Image (cartoon, rainbow, N blue to C red; front, side):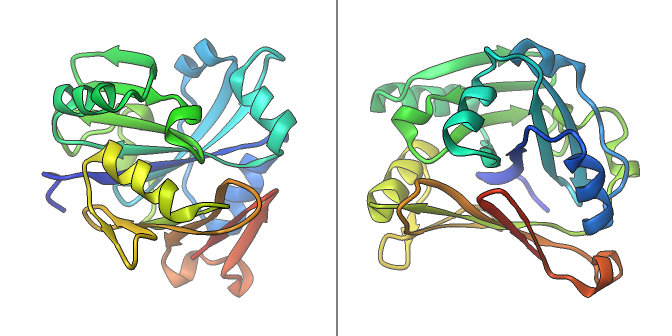
Length: 231
């Protein structure tokens, strides 16, 4: 797929159960994950699964001071982060700065640049804006990720909020994309991020596409804490 616009490239689950990695791999029929030692900077261990040219990551806090640990203590395990590929990191950063959305982490490497946006400003979850070079690459999945992955992809995600239209507007404005369906859905290049009414603000569902042969015992969904994975 051409990558000349905004795409939802990676979704992240947080859990305090390291065994969830093996269970997720078995239930969804995923390939071997990449374990990134770099996330130790955030007090985490992780596993990144390739699904087509998109990615599903699990992070597990290893430190009581890790931001993900504070999230778990407050909200429990579930959806934690969405990473969007943007065509131009400089203009994306300028856009969020102009909106008053704080960037809590920035990195610029030869093959990718990224910024994490403060969840208190963007709402719902941590959002990362990333520009890989070349566009079809993805450093966070490790070397040769295409050989470890399975066919399929990420279809989208659903977030709940007491004010879903306002939350959708924040995300759309920060990402530089439009809002559709009466203000409750934002559309990227191939994915839909939907916002619905709910008491708890955050991810409620990740929507995946997996080959039928990969579905464990015919199941079509799997729940991790407050998050339902649907395929």
